[in-house]
Length: 203
Figure 1 (tube, rainbow, N blue to C red):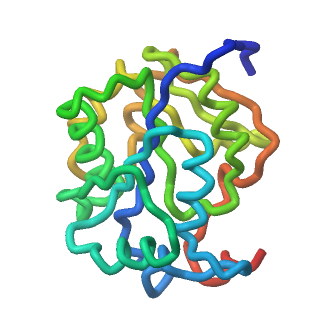
Figure 2 (tube, rainbow, N blue to C red):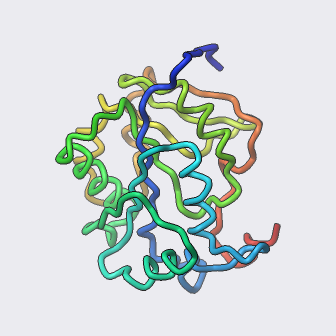
Figure 3 (cartoon, rainbow, N blue to C red):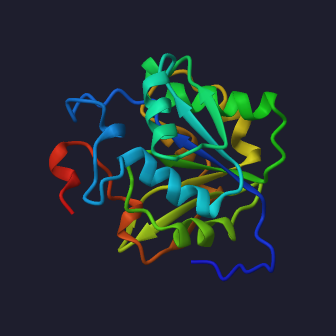
């Protein structure tokens, strides 16, 4: 773990990846209810919005029902991004998201890729990771020796990420740039606790 510290953390934009099809869950897990009555997606958005001043919610084309449910719950994402290649998996959605950031000329030093099905992630963890962000780094949280999310990609890597059209994510890009990987130890099991089945919601 690095001892980097700054008075003002670098500007980091959040990409909340919510364009999956929830095949293993059996229904739209984004609208599944947690113990406190909030939906999984609304919970994740509330956490992320505490750590990032700019957030892009990445969804599939035709996700109006999900967005309407968020509005009814009082959750108002700052921005929405439609992933036209969502059917190609997380890789397709990531490619769409990073192409959009480049076209929009997003000024952030890095972009935090946050999976929408990780409602137990702590906002303080996100803030901790943000302090380590650099344009030439890939910042990855680690808890008890296991890596997790969010992963912060410095803008140096955005063009490569924008080339993704399919696949299960950005693992190949991380593997090809091992020298840029910056691990940060965090006290938060929420970085790798996601929801794949209804049983995973049992807290």
